[in-house]
Amino acid sequence: MRGLYCVLLLTLSNIFMTLAWYGHLQLKQYPMLAKLSLWGIVVLSWGLAFFEYIFQVPANRLGSNETGGPFSLFELKTIQEGVSLTVFTLITVFFFKTDKLAWNHLVGFAFIVIAVFFIFRKW
Image (tube, rainbow, N blue to C red; front, side, top):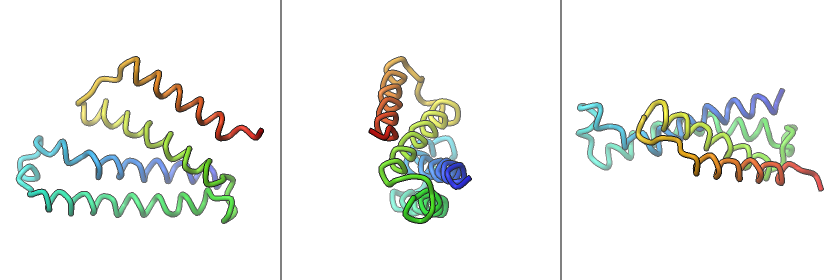
């Protein structure tokens, strides 16, 4: 169960991370927020990143085999990257609607899945 909770918390964390890192690029759609200065955007992004860390830190503590979880640090980082790309892709395609998912993206993601295989494989 710790592994599942870890992945769920990492997913929530990555939703906030994607919004903090890239959401400000969509502010032109919201006139009140579009007027924010660069420093205003930085503060807004930091506010969102705070929630990223609220979920990310417990996810890593639950998932780490050093604190009773099932994953090594390499495995945790690999899971985080996979979750990050999945969340980023879904938000970009369905929420931001700024980019289209193309074949080359899918090929790149397939290589990442192959990397996950090699990271998790016990040789």
